[in-house]
Image (cartoon, rainbow, N blue to C red; front, side, top):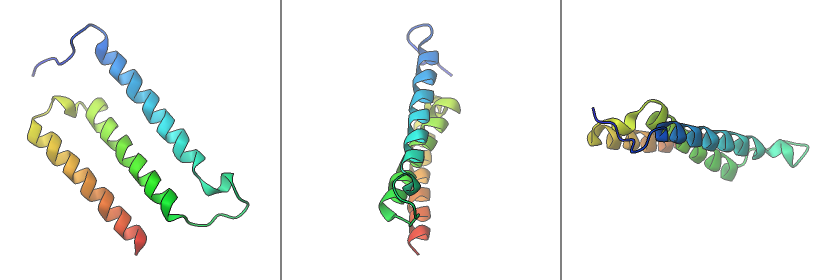
Length: 97
């Protein structure tokens, strides 16, 4: 296995930025909740799609950076990306039914 970092501490920098993005997405998803805008809560397809898309990004970041899949073989990285997209599509289809 080869080390992909070019400078000392750059791995820590990637993890820190990943954590910051994950935190921002979490806060953004919470803010999208309809209860922040109205007294009654009604389901919204647009908000659900956006939250599911943000979840897809979060899962990709967690798997890639915290589970170190970025050092895995290309076929594994691509199959993981395909699986995540398929999972997103299935969950969204189940939501629409």
